[in-house]
Amino acid sequence: MNEQWFVSINSSGTEGAPKIAFAKNGNILVAGAFSNTCFFGPNPTDTLISSTGNSLFLAMYNSNTGALMWKYAILRGLATAKKVGSLAVDKDGNILVGGSTPGNAKFYGKQGASTTNIAGNTGFMAKFSPEGEFLWEITFNAPGSNTAGNVLGIVTSEDHYYLVSQTITASPG
Image (tube, rainbow, N blue to C red; front, side, top):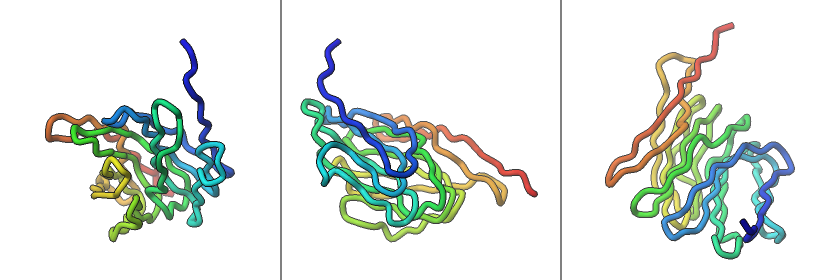
């Protein structure tokens, strides 16, 4: 097997294990977590800065050349780092990102910020266009005041999305 190309994604702060998926057009999607500055390749413009602490990112690379096509800090304002739980693509090429937030945050995409603020300890699934434009999100909490859901898997069928979630409960005291 011959290596076609290699790109390193790293952060000047903490980083979360990224998820990877193929876009409908064959390009490569990567989603993960970072704090401070995240580097997506050798060019100085291939960076994102998290001015609000910790963020989650979504990026697309050309599958033939490894060139960065776009990157966005899609969830900003996290008090502590969190990992992306899942990454999937639906039949129309839309991108689905799942996970959880430990604190208040807001979704972003190609067009900027969403109008929705997410409360802390919330599981989520967010949908983005094939170009990275934020479309919508669903959020949920498991029963209990210190409980959050974390979307670990998303599977798509013709017109449905199926989520696999883990419930995390903090012990009082």
